[in-house]
Image 1 (cartoon, rainbow, N blue to C red):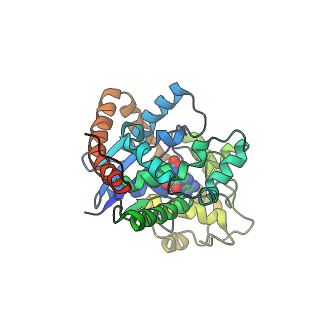
Image 2 (cartoon, rainbow, N blue to C red; image 1 turned 30 degrees about the vertical axis):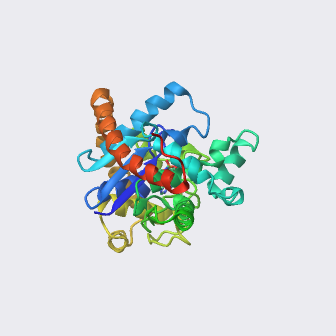
Image 3 (cartoon, protein in one colour; image 1 turned 120 degrees about the horizontal axis):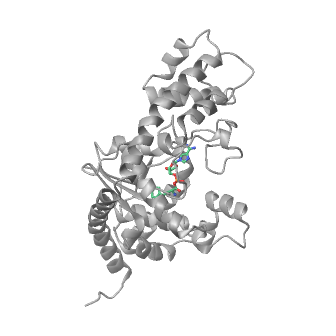
Amino acid sequence: SPRVLSGIQPTAGSFHLGNYLGAVRQWVALQETHDAFYMVVDLHAITVPQDPAQLRVNTRLAAAQLLAAGLDPERCTLFVQSHVPEHAQLAWVMNCLTGFGEASRMTQFKDKSARQGADRASVGLFTYPVLQVADILLYQAHEVPVGEDQRQHIELTRDLADRFNGRFGPTFTVPKPHILKETAKIYDLQDPTVKMSKSASTPKGLINLLDDPKATAKKVKSAVTDTDTVIRYDVENKPGVSNLLTVHSTLTGTSLAELEERYAGKGYGALKTDLAEIMVEFVTPFKERTQQYLDDPETLDSILAKGAEKARAVAAETLALAYERVGFLPAK
Ligand code: TYM
């Protein structure tokens, strides 16, 4: 079956609603139909300073949340990026194929380095997208399930795969992004024109899945909408309401048209009250399941160890081929 690969950073602590709806939810679905590889990208995490003890805690926490969200180690390969050294090895090769200008055009780097100040941004942050390219190509992935903000990195992956294949002969599968239109970008609840993210201007706009469910309900109820009263999906003119409808629709499996009909003639208060309840029903068991995995670190670590072993078998084969293609003398 076709292969998918994706990754999530452990830096955040709790995943937020955008991570879940934009990416992790698709990961869970795709493990049923695809040969699926999912990882916690700790190598990417250290492109910005991390506290070592906290990084270890957050890596387990990320894995626990992925399992709580529904990843099944019998159906997918779940692993930690640093457990598979081939990622760093292939990244070096791909670095040598990437233009300096090409890397400079990556918008996430530009944003992040601007936030940190150019002098403090690491070279690792600069080559971050190239490591992501290596992540994907190592597994010969056909599709990469991500949110909209990762599209440019998948484009770079396609360009570099083509470049390598053209220069050295067919080696890598050229992957496609798997981005679902409706949930590609979940917006901040306080500023529905910007994507939900950890660097939100106010914590009220960000739904962390592991927060107290009561606080989450409160954030939903105080979401920014507009001065109109009609509940209609219209991203352009009604971004706040549309974002709430998207979340409702995805979590309940109700179509947007059905929701518009259900809320016809009702106020924003009704939509928010319902959605607050839906969110609480979603996050409460999620939080409990995450805690169960954290309470049993041995089981968690053994899932990750098995995952790393399966991942390495695939990654090592691709790396050996790439090394041969570029002309490295095989070690005897
Ligand atoms: P990360 O950890 O920032 O985010 C994980 C996933 O969540 C998606 N996402 C969103 N989707 C919709 N709306 C939002 N507001 C939102 N915010 C985040 C992201 O698009 C992502 O899919 N560079 C990647 C990690 C990575 C990776 C890879 C991904 C490393 N190697 C290889 C795919 C393949 C990142 O930082 O994701």
